[in-house]
Length: 363
Image 1: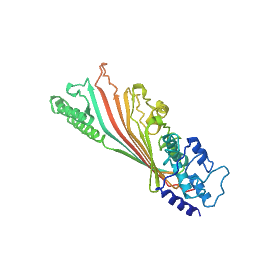
Image 2: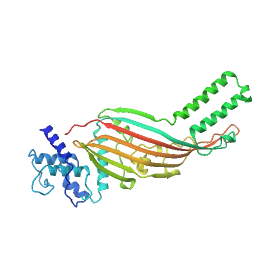
Image 3: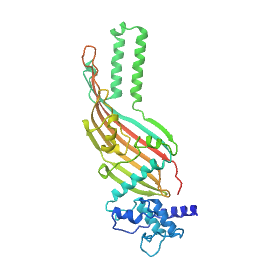
Image 4: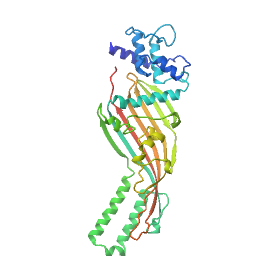
């Protein structure tokens, strides 16, 4: 019977051609009217409750109206209406603010990964798209540049050092030491090239483990999302086949100087005050080495949540955003107290995290 109900509910979910009736309910009234199992949430389990009443398996709960469409019968159309309301599909005429309603659903659903802890596979990628360096007070004026890509600047510096080794100064350096220096120069060139390659990490997290807190955004917290409507550009909900999707698009946000909380001490402020920090794993950008963070910009943020219609649980989550940092490197001082080269870098990083969530059984 349980399997048959699941199949019926799935079929009912796929009947998306018909429109649900129009209501004039507030969000509070939605939770009051459509929480059919009285658990404090409006979700796919409420649609299953209506299905069981429609099938005559469970008795109606006093005070609950299961004939949602008001046609005098409790049918699969009422089940579909309950499901669509729970999923946030077609709520424009139902909730006072459908975006707020859908964002609240999104937060509950994405946080369910930390609550249910079903296990997942994580694929994270970070890539440096650009690092523009500006230098001053270099040991040679030819090494003072403005907005030059880091790999080009590294090659320029390496060329300069090799010219020194090939010139008169190189005659004073022992052969073995000169060979070591040339190898170091070659290593620098390679590291500069590698810095622009995607850096990918993969991890599998088992069910019911505490690593759901440490390795699912926001890492090291028991909650996944602190977003408000003010933090986002839009939220879009739609369906395809057996799945619902929620797509949150973020605004572009810029923080200047001390507006951005850096280092481990700034962790709490980052997830409470920085819009992208309320949903993404964002960089700490420590300044303990003497670096100075001038500006941080977050842009192109998007979170796509894929939900199984039958269970209401996420099956995939994709996070994507770009951030740009403007940082002054610490200036080294020689034994005479003279300052060395001054370097500023403007770095653009592209980050993505993709999670394949283990399937969850229907209760």
